[in-house]
Amino acid sequence: MEETADGRSIAFSRRELIQGAGVLLGAGVVGAGVSSCSSTSGSTASSKWQELAAQLTGTLLRPGDPGYGRMAPPYNRRYVDVEPQAIAECTTETDIQRCVSWARHHGVPFVVRSGGHSYAGYSATGGLLISVASMRSIALDPATKRVTLGAGVQNRHLFASLPRYDVGVPNGRCPTVGMGGFVLGGGFGFNSRKYGLASDNLVQTRVVTSDGHLLVCDANQHSDLFWACRGGGGGNFGINVDYVLQSQPVGELSLYKVRWKWSDAPAVMAAAQVLQASAPDALSARVGLDVASTTPPAEDPSGLSVSALGQFFGPVDQLETLLAPLLAAAPTTEKVIRSMDYTEALAFFAQNVPVGRFTEKSVYIGPDGFDASFVETGMTWIEKWPGSANVTAVGLTLFAWGGAMGRPAPDATAFVHRDASWLSVVGTSWGPDDPQELIEENLQWVGQFFDALGPYVTDQSYQNFADPALDNWQTAYYGTNLPRLVDVKRTYDPENVFTFPQGIPLHI
Image (cartoon, rainbow, N blue to C red; front, side, top):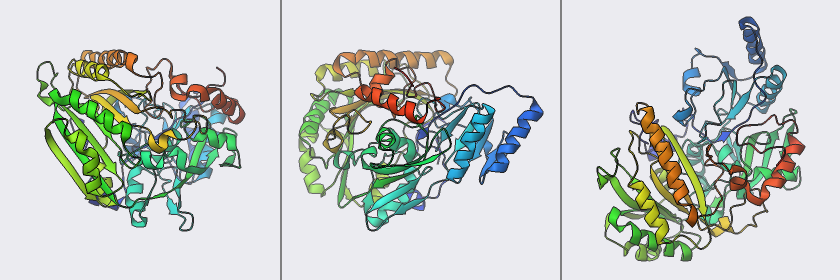
């Protein structure tokens, strides 16, 4: 399924998730590139593409070829005008190695895409798009319960495969996110407070480096590169061709989805803060100050509400007990609390959010949490939203952090954000027919909103929610781990072949 004509997200049914096979191409991004493309005549350009096509087991698509129009656009349609000269549909690691060698030889810029969910458009290119979306094998070792994922595996493929074994790995709710970019940048979901980040559960990965070698990376082999792949972000050091993750038992699950009136937001958010501070690892939470109407709230506030959504590893009666203080904060307008099996739970949460054209800015809240001023500031700015034809990313969302995500030392892996209480996200979105003036108003609004939250938050941001307008992105994404990441970069990519606007630099 894809977005509707007005850009709204579409939820996925249980049957669609079980079927698993898919034509969807959204996925986590592994971005990369080389120096600017060399100038060639038309005949020479055609010849060089034919040369690449002849080397591949997979297919090389050029503009006009069947399938090109479906595969070329990135997930964030904000960057839809960036069109590749060709798309290499890789089916093996050898295809990937040949693409890298060919691109370096001809000076053609490239990016790698397992589907295209880069919020900042880093999986879009005017050169060669190396697609690994076809490499989506999933294998479970029955003895170790380790799962090996091909580079193109998406969340929805996991949803279809793992429930039969009653095991899972940390995953997000968006079915079309690629596990590659998800894992490399950390990767959290509704099971992460109990089982940690996806990168925490990574035990091995194979990487094609800039010199064309295929390296096996784990705690004993190329351990420095393995460390960097556990939260150092996709596209920085090479092209990961597969991932081995330690799966975890699932067991009994209960879920909740609750909504309240906008005027009750202060009381609800205060109760959510108390709940998060004392919640067991088995309980997850996403709370939001939400916008559901395309009309500016100043003109019609009826589309505003506050919501909570999450999962509990345990029976529904225990979940109801845990949620009692939150539910007592104010009368609800919607309430779902029920037990579900693993497949039902995945379908319940599954939704592509955001969709269309959007931007999001993330920031972590410190260990002491937020206060009433944070909530008041959030409500004030949401009420100033200028409106648009697409509301799939509009509002203020908070994801409860801590639990297993907070236990590793900040330098144990490349993922540094270990002592936060919440991950806070401010976003806006717009439609293809919205005027440029309104788009600019939305971008200014989200920037000013983000700045207004500054006194109440840290200076750290989530690298998987890439923000091209973030000035301090190097330290915001990687903090004190940046110098070590730079060292790994110089070791494995000394010529900076894998580069993009927010890629790990060779020097700081």
